[in-house]
Length: 329
Image 1: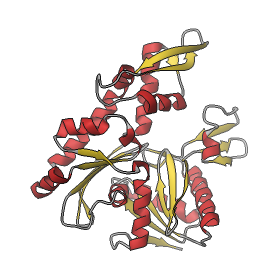
Image 2 (image 1 turned 180 degrees about the vertical axis):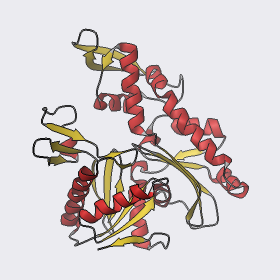
Image 3 (image 1 turned 90 degrees about the horizontal axis):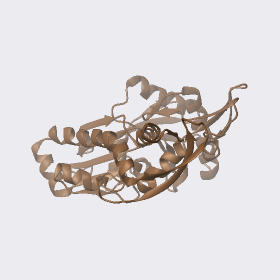
Image 4 (image 1 turned 90 degrees about the vertical axis):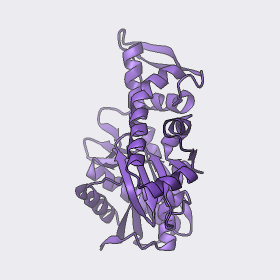
């Protein structure tokens, strides 16, 4: 079983069956009983709409475990659901993690998966998994470059001969885009909006290139001055200004990785181009911005949201030697 344990969404694959679960990484907790009342899709519907005794939270932040108990509950829910669907017992689980994860964070992932019922747990860097999932020739003596923009982290890596030659993981991703939009609208329009509205703006009218498109979207929120509901028209230019800083952070990180890449591999990347994956790759014009800033062709992978999950599945099916199941029960 392969798990893309994402800040925003968790995707589960099973060897020979493909993707069987795709749900938000959200848990709803009853604060009085300390018990989980919903996980995944059901819990996400509760965000911003719960009474005082219930909180809907994301147990992962910046790609790593922020709330251990909630992560354990969430993993157990997804593993149990996958076991029922796939009819497997005590599965081996391969989990994708950011490339710069600390040893403490790595152990937390392994322990959470163990307590959720996994018989063996393997860890793979998301950058390597996404490259495998995007069908890049990772085992060959040639350079491949990936930019995986997830909900909490952006993993950038140059890969050759089955390993990461140069890599960088920045704790900037889709959640930061949403938060930047929320803060911008709060400052410019004195309007309080929630994560769902910010995400809708990002998906519908956002663009990484200035003056590339001119779209508008009506949004509703709470007026910070009067306290009453209020409607505002937001433009693509507004969202560009809101996202300029986090986008530039990612662009600079891409340049830093390229600067550290050995010359022969740099030549390969010039010839083959860069591949973008993850939800952030769907931000309109982002791949074109990378091309402008680096002079290297940049394409969006097929099914960019699924590359890490597909990569874990291929590792399990092909048995890559680089993946070690480091914990047994």
